[in-house]
Length: 405
Ligand code: HEC
Ligand code: HEC
Ligand code: HEC
Ligand code: HEC
Image 1 (cartoon, rainbow, N blue to C red):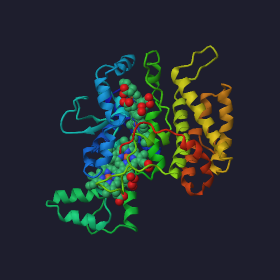
Image 2: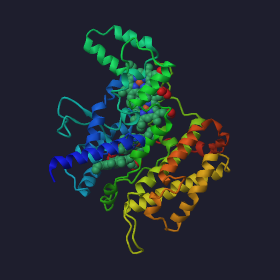
Image 3: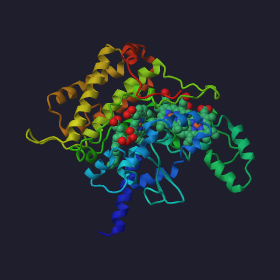
Image 4: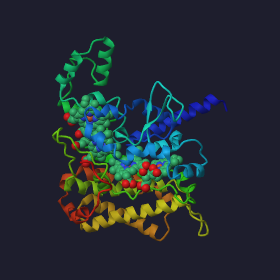
């Protein structure tokens, strides 16, 4: 076939993935085209430092920040062993299959030292890996009202600066009115431009599971025989993993004496439950990519085993939460009833690949159903007094790593 045609089909295919990925709340790219689109919108953490000094300082102490250096230096040789098992050459930092979870790419005028292209990794997992690439929302996200926009506009000299600025604050002219409340409009516009704000709970923490569940089959299977195989996923629990080294809640505190605020118990309850459902959603998504054993003698792959066990853990934890809550939270009660047969099937080793693609759950696949029920649960967050029965469990959770300040 003509190369151009093949290319066009590939591009069309990846655009399709992109649209559906956005609809599915994904902040991760899966093709080269998407990767470049993301990289072109990344500003880089230096652009946040001026106003979020303590967030940046605390982030610089995390494994997220250090990930670029640690894979590049590879002091224990584990990254190069993984590369070799994957039959990849060069630095892991030059590899798309590692960049997706370990680094942040950015486009620049000069050649990137790792990729030899005009885009490539510039830092580890960064602000924009979680809050979304910032070029289309940065200028608007911090504005309090239209006057603040007008004031800044009046300091601009050239027409080019002015039109660029108007584009960045999503206005046609500086005398534009905005419909209704300014901050509601602002939040809507920044969300449309890819910003993931702290109150967008599902989308924000969905990010974590996209990287901390390793849905890359080859990465798990091909490294299975190594002394240090690549993790199939983290033992990720959102309250612990967000309360330790990742915590950076400095907003609204004294800039001379900043306090990194702890999560309230109410917040912990919601995150804990929502996180368990997300854990299961992502494990199921990964399991649906696995090769299922065809008969009893068929040796299951590491990927299949790992993902099946994550699904089993996830489903039974949701059921257990519902038991602790004595079925008092409607969304969890229904969810629990509907997933119990699946859990039994897995326990008896009867789960088939087809079970994951059939739309038996209120017309949805199990993955889609978990997502909907999770969102529903979060939407009703003020109606769930019963969740306090989780407090004993929550108070026993240890933060993952040390927090800053
Ligand atoms: C010029 C100052 C400034 C810069 C630069 C800046 N921010 Fe902000 N940011 C703010 C202010 C002020 C707020 C509080 C806005 C509000 O909600 O009224 C804020 C709020 C936020 C919030 C929380 C929003 C919410 O709903 O609570 C996030 C997340 C954020 N910024 C991320 C970033 C990231 C990431 C960067 C760099 C790419 C960045 N900011 C650069 C000033 C800035
Ligand atoms: C789907 C996301 C994902 C992809 C793709 C991925 N990793 Fe990882 N990697 C992780 C996560 C998450 C951890 C931390 C796991 C844990 O909690 O123990 C990790 C840990 C590691 C570690 C151990 C920690 C360290 O920094 O020394 C190495 C080495 C590593 N990855 C190498 C690679 C290499 C090489 C590639 C590309 C071939 C790659 N990874 C691709 C998500 C990913
Ligand atoms: C873009 C991918 C990505 C996203 C998004 C992401 N992580 Fe990570 N995270 C990683 C990788 C990769 C590592 C391992 C880095 C290493 O060890 O070199 C890691 C490590 C960590 C660690 C350190 C674990 C340890 O070994 O002590 C914590 C804690 C953590 N992540 C929490 C979170 C939380 C909470 C979220 C969501 C709010 C999140 N991560 C989102 C990729 C990601
Ligand atoms: C691993 C994902 C992750 C990374 C990396 C990350 N954030 Fe956040 N950020 C979050 C989450 C999750 C919250 C909400 C925390 C909560 O509600 O307890 C948050 C909250 C915030 C807030 C609001 C804090 C408050 O006090 O209300 C700001 C501002 C912010 N982030 C800015 C940044 C900046 C700047 C960086 C880079 C230096 C960054 N974030 C890196 C996940 C991340």
